[in-house]
Length: 204
Image (cartoon, rainbow, N blue to C red; front, side, top):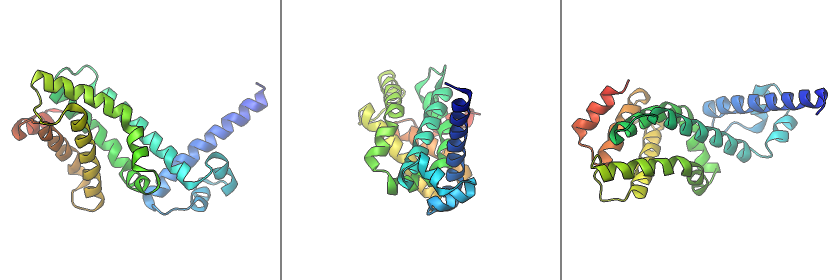
């Protein structure tokens, strides 16, 4: 690869990253932001945006992929080395919430442009890790639920979506939502409310 080709590739990658960063900020500010608006905010012509993303839906889909990657990374780091299933769930949800909160308006927007099935498929790896954790907790008696672990993982996932929508609708304060959601998720897994509240308070 020549130096010129390398330079062009690096510039294209930088443009793509900038467009994604600006698009996220613009869409969070105005969920109806057009490709023209995003191009102007990014300081590029519309053709450059379309060169990277053939449609607004493709751009939003790429942003959703980035959000899912950030969620998976936060979950992995939060649970690393934690052996107690209940504590692992608490640390996971508390770590996921700031990431989810950053992207919550985008996720609400994505539900209008990306199929629900598409979002579920993107979340499958993260959900699978949760199923393993929940199953271990059920086996060890840390959790108690009439639902099998895979179904319980879906319940937890939908609870977090619901809390994000509640924040969007002004029903829950964003600064309180993370810890409240964590207690709710733990109690849904059969952890007594008092113990769930203690666990959440113990996590920095």
